[in-house]
Length: 519
Image (cartoon, rainbow, N blue to C red; front, side, top):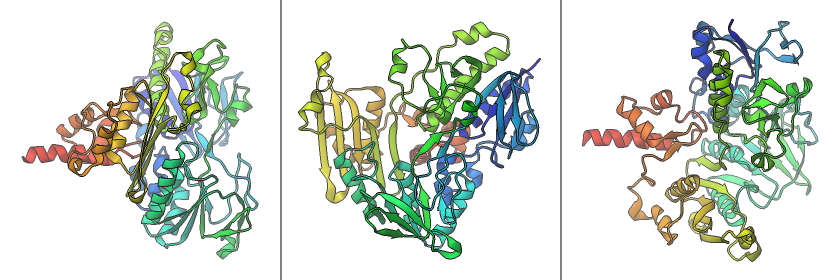
């Protein structure tokens, strides 16, 4: 009898799991049901802002074809909500009145946008009701709202200084909207970037046509626009920032309500062990934004310092690929092989990349220490480790800044603004845990005029697409095999299907190949 696998949620991570399980479905080894609240099949939610400013299409964002999946034998249910999970009977109760059973249940419910507690907004996280002219820019309907505002050259206010908010602001400004970013703190990306880098970043945003209102605490939303729509964001100093569309970019919160409702253990996300199994319930799993890998073993050193879900699509995809292999082994009647499967490798510290035309930024690791901060530089040295060293360079006039935090020559943190080639090299060194050259200025010279034609880092083995973990070598092989566009490379390798930040690098590899062919 086929193993009944039910996936709750149909976002990018669930789409990858379904894709990996398709061979087992086609062979009759597994019966797969996927349940999505939205009427659309999975699409790339990370690029919704690009859709909202007209830089891509809904078809380009699609990650799954419901009709094709149904033809392959997958039970796809769209526009349906799970009311509750009956763990005792191993059944789900759905909003359409049906009650499918499961042998293995996978939560891929993702996250929901954080709605700030402002006068004029409903702060209820479970069912926020946003007034006209206010959007959290989370789905395709939100993208159409932004598209209308940008096309009309309207005034857009972005609340939140995170990466997605900044990328939305930059894209909307370039496409003709008047944009103001409002954030609490001295500079955008306050949780990730240092003071010097933040100051250069804020100045670069202004140079790109984005107004920046820092150290601003919002208190309420005014509705005096047409049809009672948004007209101004109110601040605690009594001032107001006028606009016609308010984009909320205040972070996300894992969706754990279904898991909590059926008695599963949760913290920031649904608690799972290193095999992605929920605590005390080996038949239920969680992946992606809703999953928090923290095993119940109190002696696990790795889990003592574990954080909540990363919120990035790349780790979720790797979880989906690992879990698919595990579930297939269980379905094939090989539980011993499944249990002997190497555990999913712990995720390395993420790299934050700001993707925008005219503004390049990369941040990774701990960059809080300053060059003359003796206490911060010696932190951790008492256990025999080398002290930290800081190399810092700034050119505010031209919007360029680099900071490198090292210990024994190994890069532990980096900030690079306006230095794309230096950033690319530093990110490679950071991800490999490699030593920096003794003369740090060699890295700065990568963005010099004599290096303009090199295209930055040239190591073919480098990871070009961090979301999908695809190397330059694999992309080059796909191009040599006949792929001539980014879309074709994405279809063959999955590179570029995540945040989209590697599209220019993929184009560069394609162009280099065809230039060589012509030569």
